[in-house]
Image (tube, rainbow, N blue to C red):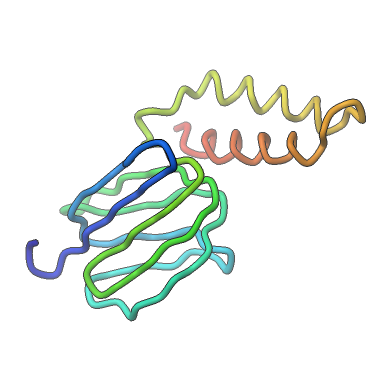
Length: 131
């Protein structure tokens, strides 16, 4: 591995989303955003629904993460998450439709409101990357 680089691995139950050398990572944790650089103090933290950002040679990349946890060591960040999508994998029209469906279900007592709220959070995370 190159000097002062981190190995970033993002893993879901169904696939390895990313395995790459990066300069830095910003994780969306339960307490807020946490920046990670090479030689970071070891930590395990819970992740919230949100956008993980990482930099490679000055360029920022985004990945949605849908809860989970991250293990940080001095030269590696391993993210285990329920679901993750690279920015270029997101279908924003589909995310918008999911948001509208979930909003309707949240206000309808015939549906499982907790499940609809989770679907709404996921759609909002995806849509936050729509530029």
